[in-house]
Image 1 (cartoon, rainbow, N blue to C red):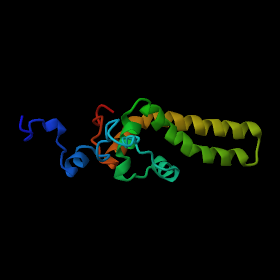
Image 2 (image 1 turned 45 degrees about the vertical axis):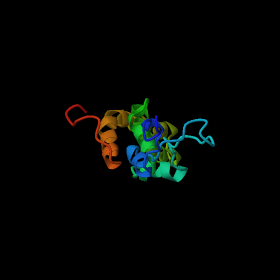
Image 3 (image 1 turned 90 degrees about the vertical axis):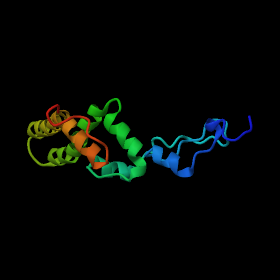
Image 4 (image 1 turned 90 degrees about the horizontal axis):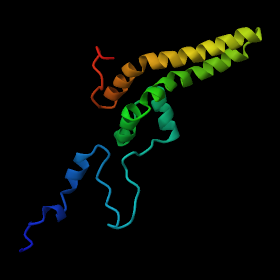
Amino acid sequence: MDGQGEHPATETPPAGDAAQARPGGPEPEPAGAGAVSPPRDRETPPLAGRLHYLIGGTLPPRYNDWVSNDLTGPGWRVRQALRPFLLMVPFAIVFALLPGQLSVRLTLVVFLLLSGIGLGFATSGFFRNRRLEQHGFPPVFTVSED
């Protein structure tokens, strides 16, 4: 054992390799190798970024892990279905405040919110693929499977 690279696992890789291996950046240091820092796997966007994402905007690449988890992780279909519902809420509030019979206004509000949820579930796969491609990921379903 002359110490000339016999243990490649202990050698430090070049700085560019770790950053290229993961879209979120370099690997976090293992526990006990210095200061403990939270992993950067899922850097959460700020509130303004999440609202921008909610209405169909693209987030910067540093949030790719968060976007990937949002669109492919457990509960993705419910999150996708809630987006149209949340976008319908301001319209439902406006229609609820218009003058008229209470029963008509409530019926209209319920119809808007239920149709938002229904359309959300019906189109969740299509819009998931669109948002995945928008952020540079391959689509999960082909058009015929969706």
